[in-house]
Length: 401
Image (cartoon, rainbow, N blue to C red):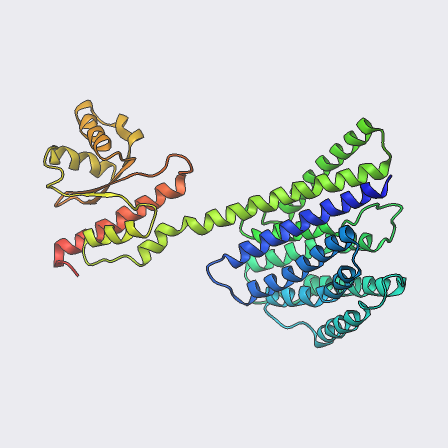
């Protein structure tokens, strides 16, 4: 096993962890509102990202200042983790624990400037971090959850689970048990924490589901590591390093998938936001305001004048059955009705026709991309139609607002 192999494996693991941490920061900051908990998460992740970046620079550039900065930032990780747990549980941690984390951060920030050739500052830092994480884990395990919602309790459980994984892998960063764990493995736990922090409402929200996904990814990574070792006729340490790199890339893919899902979900409510801010003076103003602020932009409003070439009675009867009509629904109608509707779709290059008012007959022809369209978008169109009908009914009864 060469030093180059070890350097490459450590760099890949830490680089993947840094990428996952930065992705988590971007996703959390992109949320609609930054509350106290989000700010604490971002603060903790920035500290972790700085540690990862500094040690990557230290390993590859061999400049002592980066090693010093690595230990300096690492001294504040226990306090950052404690502030996140306080935000999750919505209550203060025991003052003694907070003071211990604060004083320890100050002490080990000073010790960071002691030469790295002296082993004891590093081992003391490891003991401080392990003790801090153990205390935080116990606080998360036995803390009072009164007044917390089911989702908040679930997020605390996810945090606790990721923290346990981090504690198990942290010692490898300091060379402890190096003969058994020939890689700095904390990056794996950091990636796992970022993955669970990004998507608390996703399908992997439960602790069991997250554990299962992690276990399957780890099993596949071990298979790849063993296969690569047999093919290259290397030793078991090589298998561990390849497995660790594969595991990190797998978890990074999961984290990036959660990040893309989070961005997609943040854009999914564009129509809902447009409905909240819509002008309800009359149905035309309503539809124009909704279209301008949503994916319905470019829709064409069709009133009785625009429908003069069509049989209004036939259209009205058909569209009462299907107030949100797509082209795939044409087969539900008789040939003469289907031909008129198909002509509308072709004339306005539309994917959907939406009834805004039946008396007088007002439609909107809109075009939505076929790629990426899902059932949620269809539901949003139905909601737009129902609200438009309410506005038109009120307008018919009492006049424009």
